[in-house]
Image (cartoon, rainbow, N blue to C red; front, side, top):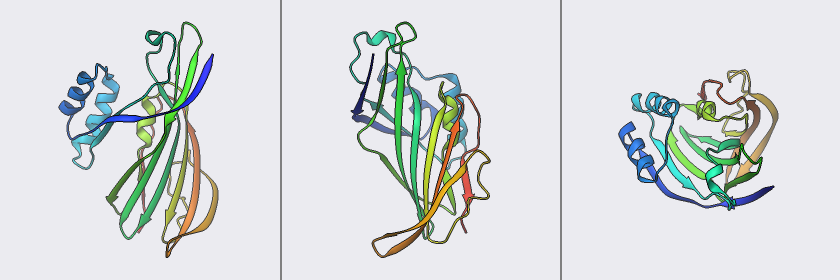
Length: 195
């Protein structure tokens, strides 16, 4: 048995250190793996990152106790880079299965997450895919002022298409990238110089 649904995101929080990550998870009765804490700690220790945390509504299942941990099976990132600022729009889709019954659900938030920051490079958090138990398919749409070839990107990212787009009065060069990353695989974040 399977179902698909759109889910709400709620109890959103930003953590600036690992103590905040732990407290937030404890508050909502969630356990967080040592592997996730280690990875989040590496990000936070640089002083350049914060951790976004939220709960995602889980679709109805007859026996919730059998559903222990979700994997993000698809991520889409729309990256707009203009005048030293990146606007990153994230969309994730989840899969959760019962190992005992084989029942599963696929679901995703009804909206996306928008993050905006100043940067001289294109950035996307590919490293977090190693926390998934299943392969994660990643699609990135990169829109920049000047054409960006993608030659300096991680070897697993394949160029799927190029084009041009106009948004308001701004013209963008568009590059679509795709990859599938195995769960547990440690790959570097997308962090490519744009200047």
